[in-house]
Length: 497
Image 1 (tube, rainbow, N blue to C red):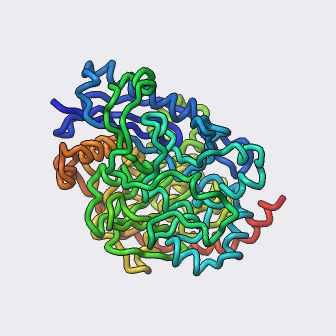
Image 2: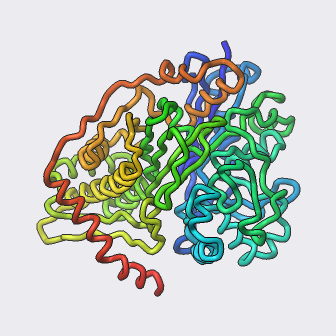
Image 3: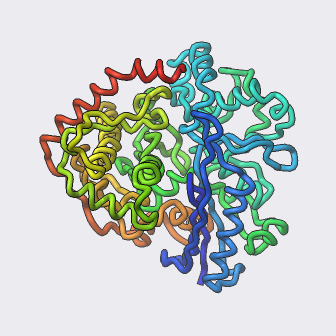
């Protein structure tokens, strides 16, 4: 029997699976870590401990618990949160913590300056994306200006996935899907690094070599084998961002397929028939040459439910809290007795791209319970999600099929509220393992053990969450949109203090 191994580094947890060519999971392992917030608007991971430390721990655990000989593993693929920004020296050693994706808003000034200097229209035409907190280019410019001593020692800028692949193989690579987030340094038409839009960010030779996600980047080195337990010489794919691997894990493969990932954030990927460029959403080449994807993401989703549990439900045992909160919320009617929540606790990404947006619970009175507030919080995330799906519809990109995945799919209230508020049915597949499972499939694909269509055999659909028409939600959504518009100036002023 042949096996493949997939490991994914998430915002709060690393997950790994060891899978055979029929898609059967023979071992599963996880390891928790924290997102560091050293200053307001910043979000970081420790690359040695949270990325490489987790990878080695999980790989060793998978081998030990499965009892499988490492030489039977025919390929390895990894994914991770992204896009991140990590400067490393000539030996590949991190020079600081990894700066995370769009939840880290430290480069706001650089986003604004580059946009004004280059012009938003030019950036979108060349890079496919407006500059936002998701963009890596402004964060590299922030590094150059704010940490010149680190920038002077920087040999390469890596992402989380690139860092793992470099540790495993010695190769410095990045997939095109991830690279498209490096605006204004990546040209989506040329599909190559460019510096003619901004030559003061970084020398292009310090960026990773571009490849496709299903290509073999290199092979496990002797040092990596000793640390991970994997066999020296095992092929390793280039890998990708976790959301893309997660999308593939549930069969997002045809134009019109859309994934909705219920995780620390809501992340949405639409497999598009052609390039769609609009400042409200993101674009990238898909995992395979000649294919396209459109993306969107909220800044806080699962993160917000964790915040609520930790701050408002401290009386509940941690391992039972979400179940109890769901039961309390289920006793509250749709609309949560007139409560509205703006879920912008870390600003917001798509479609408003407002780093100054603030979280709000509006409409409280003395009759409201904790269950009402928790339900309103879930509905607020769903309203934010509808704002995204409505944006896709305005661009002529409504999904033909919406596939839900991620840990949040275990929350029946969240799933149903999302379908009811967006008006879109959701398909749930048999396995909601997520990105690590997608990684294992992509590894098998890279070495010819499976074909792309086999993902529907590995992970077939099992149920559909049908959208219900609820008048309360339709009214609440309009009020949700107005509440943001009427308070965003106040939120911005608060952010300046």
